[in-house]
Amino acid sequence: MNFILMHKKIPIVDLEIDSETGHILKIGTPINIDHLPLGTFTNNDIDRVALREWWKSRCIPQNRDGIDILEKINIHSPQSLSCKYYGLSLSDHYWICPKDQAINWNDINFFANPFSYDVSDLLFNSEYKEGSRKFNFCSPDCTTSGQLRKKWKIINGDRYLLKKGSLSFKLEIFNEVIATSICSRLDIGHSMYTLSQENGVFYCMTKNFLSPTTELVTATSIFNQYKLPDNISRYEHYIACGEMLGIKNMRWQVEQMLILDFIMANSDRNFDNFGLIRNAETLEWVGVSPVFDCGSSLFFNKSNYSINLAISNADSKPFRSKHREQIKLVRNIDVVNLNSLSSIGDEYSELLSQDQDLTHERRSLLCKGLTRRIQILKKYAQATKF
Image (cartoon, rainbow, N blue to C red):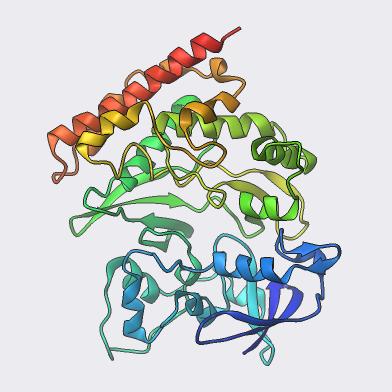
């Protein structure tokens, strides 16, 4: 099928997309290169490989929990799902307009218009009643990335993202909530998660931090657009890019994220779950995105035996492979009031106690891990204080 890639009301480039696979087959001559997704153009031309990768990154990954249920509605590729309703998202303002149709952005975008819950019922709850009615693909869940089951929901006019946990412990959702408390105590800009329950199943939810005019540009896109020089680290390069784009307090805001990730032993702070926010209309840079997606933390996938071993030797991303090395990138740990976290272990224990399937032994080990991580950071901060 033939489409025009659009940025809100601005046409960007013609695309031919295979409706069965969702893959981009052909890319035309750019119509408006300034509004191409960041990281997909170079030397005043489209980087066709990068544009295809960007398109793929907006789709549900093949390893999404429960993704096989798409077969129930004859969808054989998660990437093809994004084509079912114009490739619309609640993370940015890009979409694909069929060349033979006159469609107005104002009439279809999910920031301002209602959407169906058919896709979310299928992917989030594994609910599908065959032949009951025509399936409605009008949903931002067609383009929501990530491995965990998740869905968008409109509550009192606002857009909220709901997430479920994975594995037998399903700790990611509890970790999002405790991360919210840690960020509030340390005055770190963050997306606020709350814990909810439905039909005996826990999930966490957070309000969309983007608006009808703003969008997220991931660190991946930043690195794709502004290539890494030979004489600088990825960490310093990312900070330099933000400062070049006019982001205020860029270094300190990135440092705050690394401090939080150290405390929580976050093992999956990849280049797609942090970035910058820009105005989709003016292309002006607004600031650093609030911290979000902290679920893969606090030994969520470790056995009870392995937790003690991991407390002082936790793996990290994205700038170093170990947190004990990554925290050395932070220059200003001593200005963070770590004493404000004195009761966070008790709060985490109370939060986890709501899950009746979690043993007392495991809850104790997890809370010990959190308080121990804070103690380690305190000692490091004291040792490096001038």
